[in-house]
Amino acid sequence: MNKLSPRVVLITGASSGIGAALGEHYAKQGTILALLALDKDRLRLVTNKCRAKGAIVYEYLVDVTDLEAMRRCSADLLGRVEHVDIVIANAGIRREEDVDCQDTQIPEDTMRVNYFGVINTFSPFIRPMKASGHGQLVVISSIASFRGTPNSGAYSASKAAVNVWTESLRLRLIPHGICLTTICLGFVNTAMTAELPFWMPGILSPEQAGELIARYIEKKARVVTLPWQSRLIWTGFRILPGVVYDKLIIWAKAHGPKR
Image 1 (cartoon, one colour):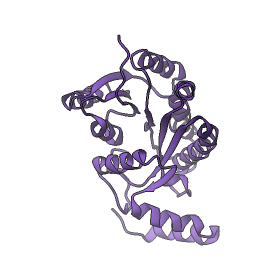
Image 2 (image 1 turned 90 degrees about the vertical axis):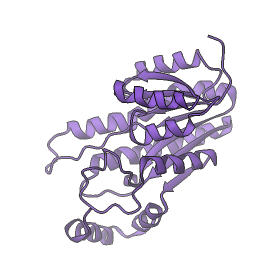
Image 3 (image 1 turned 135 degrees about the vertical axis):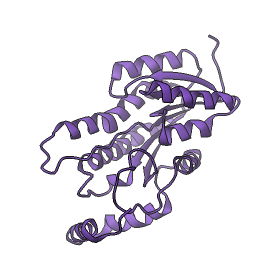
């Protein structure tokens, strides 16, 4: 197949939610999309919508925790296009731990997808981007990375790990002309938040989230917290002394507004 030159965007977790919204946002004539997910039927629906908008779309049914499979996908894509411009590591899971933290598989699975899955997504594209002198890596992190809450230990830990790892990677890639953007996202109305019982300030639709994320990708932001409600509240949480934060969160869990 001849090399292709239009803008090329790869998105993981592209079959639903934010990933699907980002795919549809970038879908237009002259754009090449690589959409990665595990749900074949849902991914095909997203692919069809993106193709209807004029995009060239390559589908990959792949698990981001499988490094060799991710490398095969990247090799296939790089055999079809001249360069991948944007890689968006969006795939993620959230599973609430049992009360006594006896099920150690929950934090292990969460870390494998949310942290190692990001490494597996970025790794195959670092050398090609260095060779070309440009490219952008984007990770969809979370406000949960800033401080722990009673019901987000494993999820918060995985996202905090992502934030620190991508900060280190960013510093290594800047001299090579590669941008790394970390999006610390607040609440989005997806399957991940559907059963959360508490009030979620500033909750976004996947489409709203996709538009906001794409805006900051275009700006080549370093680290950004979205939306503004989340940025305001979690900035306050981050500067609170630990003792004060503990009391506030425990009170909020017991007496705060419900969904």
